[in-house]
Length: 258
Figure 1 (spheres, rainbow, N blue to C red):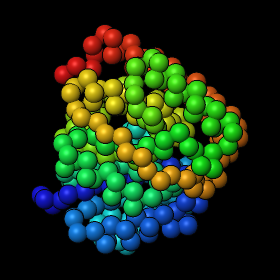
Figure 2: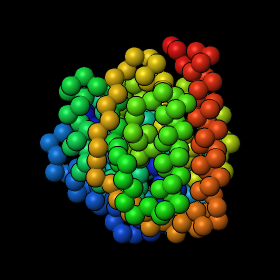
Figure 3: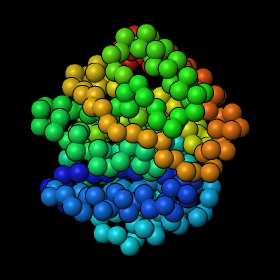
């Protein structure tokens, strides 16, 4: 569809409980009320839970405008990139399956493109509603560490609600370190790819806007909760800090320039 306006990319990994409570129906009901053309691309990152794959695939098959992609396991960034490559919209939004940031918050992002911005990110601000004390502390530490290392004035780089002009997303995603070393993921690897994306965009002269959005942790995935209880959250936080240092090194060496 040549004149498609919006592509929504939703990465999916063991999202059974979120899918069962109707998150894709929320997305569909909102988009059907909009005047612009749209598509939704759901990318399953080879979920170990077959029920998660089936629920997502069945919904996409039954709802016009929804596309299901079964990807090989590569982590969150790779799943988003798969969707970006297949997208046809002028604007691409990626949003988390749990809809902690409701799709309706898109209304706050889209006007920024008319103002000339190329990347518009949803921000949770300093609040993390429904976060555990440990996750709030980790978020505080990561935010300040990131801003000191990268001299960034962005409050929240990690919210799963970001929009880009299509040409910008398709230029920058292939330059991400996590994409270049694809195939190394184990489990639902998130990492600091958002930070790297924003650093590259800024270095290449693209205009970035941060917009504060309504956000509340609505993730009901049992599998992800189990991983957090097993300590994966702490390991992931350490890995993200290492990635920020690598981004700083790449930035200093000039690797991100065109």
